Length: 546
Image (cartoon, rainbow, N blue to C red; front, side, top):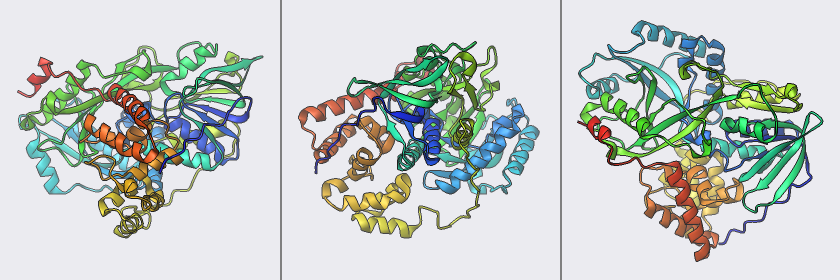
């Protein structure tokens, strides 16, 4: 079968009630909220949806334990509430994970302070503590550095391994509610006339065509690009709105003694660092480095990679970790509120809605800050700010083994039968696509090519790729393999996997040799720009393993 990709209809001279600039998790959540309220909504993203900060995060849906240190009780309450909603509503993507807070005799925080903080955290959550098994605790104690005296504190939070998939689902719901969405579509400037935002000037990066649309409201949700949109539009703020802070991560192969729980500890400089099981690998992060460069080109420095590797090596000296255990590193720029002279850890993680009325741009609002956990509540707040009545959704507790659990064996068996695929493939589809998995399975039944694995090491199949192009607004191979069906983030992936995947996908989509080569080349360029291979000759890194 050949997939016909239709050209996107022109937007030129169209009128929208709301134009949302920026297709990260916050922008998509806001567009969904506005569209559901019946407002004609346009969402535009210069690259691909979720390709910026969203895909470069630590992938935790947390209640904000560390915010208690700074007295931000309101933010903790909001985060805990939104975490519980996501656990209920997106249980295939957001799942509980056990955390261990590790302290040793050199830690800056006292055991008493941590114990009090965890008690308060659980009280705010109105949720009884679930304790980790004694065997797992003993196992972790055995592999930690025996030169320290460790105190281990158990608590529960949540993880979204693939926030890119959460964005894809919210995007689909936004379009079903009437939103118009465009990725690879850059906003050249907000059109401001007579002191009011009137619309936006757009450039379709696929065709190079420029268009202009009218709008009653402009919402600048571009994260670390917020100030650039203002500058392009001649909106002059008294000071920068965002103070960009780079956070880098390393992804490692699973090593001997790697924990099944998530670890939260302090590095030598007192910074909080996470060591997380993720995607059959180990994710370690993050750093905090001021970054005023192009957020789209940010990359982890050798010093940051050294810092993270040294930290995890000191935790697990028996594993003899080295630079060779790092699969790749990545970085993103957090759009924290600009705070001159403040320590990064002290800058609030709350979000703010900045109204540009006093700066000659009535009906334009910039969103500052925000995080994965609170994207939906930010969206409701933003909708109210522009006059849309939005009620707070009710929170209904769902117990273990409920009908909303997507991993029930019966559901997996139904998907396997519907698509004539293995139970492993059916389970993988359910984990990434939820209730839409059954429709993808039925499509896969059409041909063996659709049921073929994307690469020889993956249980995910080509039918999922077709779904991404057909219904999830994927334009490029990178849109698919890094975000909609993110198999290229897996432990196995290599250049040979990229070639094999392109061949299998191209055969189904009807690519000729020229299209196949162009798609593969563009994908490899994007992947290597995003997922950095660390330099193999850094002596300090090698020393960490000694």
